[in-house]
Image (cartoon, rainbow, N blue to C red; front, top):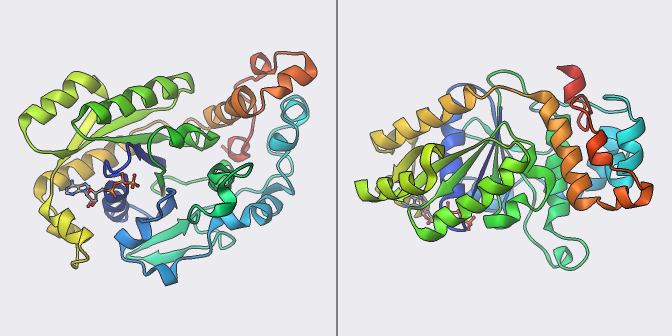
Length: 312
Ligand SMILES: Nc1ncnc2c1ncn2[C@@H]1O[C@H](COP(=O)(O)OP(=O)(O)OP(=O)(O)O)[C@@H](O)[C@H]1O
């Protein structure tokens, strides 16, 4: 299963994703991907920055070559939609494919997009780095009991590229504040247009009133919540940390999250349709103009952007 962590800056995305990846290793193999402009996931997992694997963001061309020679969807969305049969010329990847550099920490394979750099300003942008992760997910066939956990960048930036459509489930981390729930509303409305499943994790919850506040603003999307945790604070300060140090309520919250993810129906065809729709509507609206046809209306549920659909 693939899951993303999104939310307002500083809400606790990295913290909760690091706890979740540790917890998920109890059920199966886990790949954690740091796709945040602020690359802190490795640090929180206890990886020395010098030990970080080569960033995926610097390998975009090699990744495209490895997966399919180039990326026809980006080259020509119109011809891709019309002519490419499912899966042709594409490579499937499994968790642990050695082409994608990772390092191992506490039973987790860590991959990173790399930090924001000066070159990311202007025409190129951080989204091209995220494109490397999107390509990986498009070609990944994750088996039952395998987990890919992606720590996304803050706020609305997380849905500025097609990557946000590539998950079985998205955990949205929200503090019980007006700003926290306003990011939730923004994300919910955007996600609904792409049939993206979300579940809200309250974080830094201090009181029953905080839970009431979240329930009032988030409703049934509220899955579970984490209190302000001295154990987490200690982890942040570099003290040795083990999951067993966490408060029982936090354990319960992690179990709830993993059960929710495992219970999410896997909808392979959806992934192909979502990515195509996103790219055509947003990034490649020129395709409609170029052909004079409404390509979005022509996409059928069997359309394959990633070859995983063909394999299912
Ligand atoms: N439940 C918690 N209890 C105590 N401290 C917490 C908790 N959750 C997060 N924090 C602290 O809040 C700060 C921000 O958390 P974190 O870095 O995970 O947020 P983020 O959303 O990933 O931030 P960014 O937007 O910069 O990526 C950190 O210092 C972290 O230790």
